Length: 273
Image (tube, rainbow, N blue to C red; front, side, top):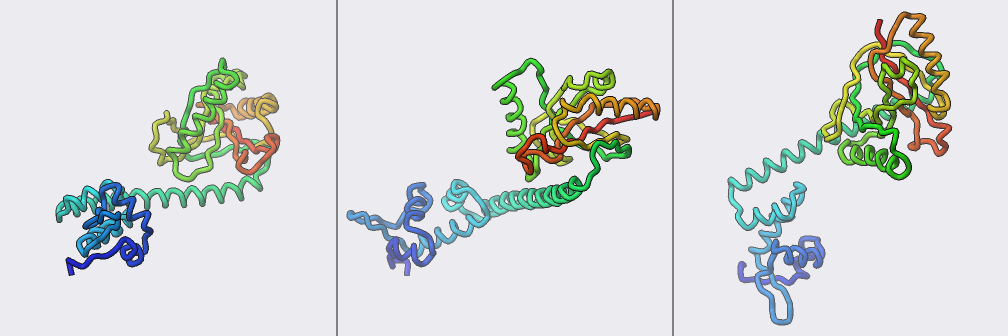
């Protein structure tokens, strides 16, 4: 049986893969034929079929063709064990990513429903759990293309690093500056990335605690003063003070709106007695 030859057409038909794929594997040195005639016809024996069986099976583990080639050329029990352990680790990572994506999807659906019903232009006071923000320093001297690049580079890096999540870029203002009325003196671009972020950007934790929060439609700069007056009045009446950075974030943005004036924002102010 080991002396029986098959053509590339035979192998293609039996295994359900194209001739182009077989030739590509050959070009990589992964699946050489048993012999090539002068006319260019390729022939394969049972030994090549066994090799192809290993290749096609290992591909189901999402292994690279290089790793598969290393294995088929030096295969053995211990090497197979190492290869499968690496594949198992890869699947564990994929399962974790799928779980994270599903949780973020569920959270996004919940928030979509919530923000359709949320009252606007009204202060809410209460306990909020901790959040985790990726930061990029804001430079007020930047203008034009440079400013746009800083903004989109902040988002583009997170897009590569974060599993499924509707990334919403906001602005942070130092709490002391805000309390003094410096209400557009931004310190950072900020994006809530969740507790499981593993990327390279600077992360700060917005701690669990008491917060003032208000939702509003439209651009922050056009409404910053009356919101500041409202926050200040509340702080004075309740004998509270700002205890950390103030965050201005969209909760509905270009993901759902085509007109910036229809964006829904929230301002979150940490407070303490």
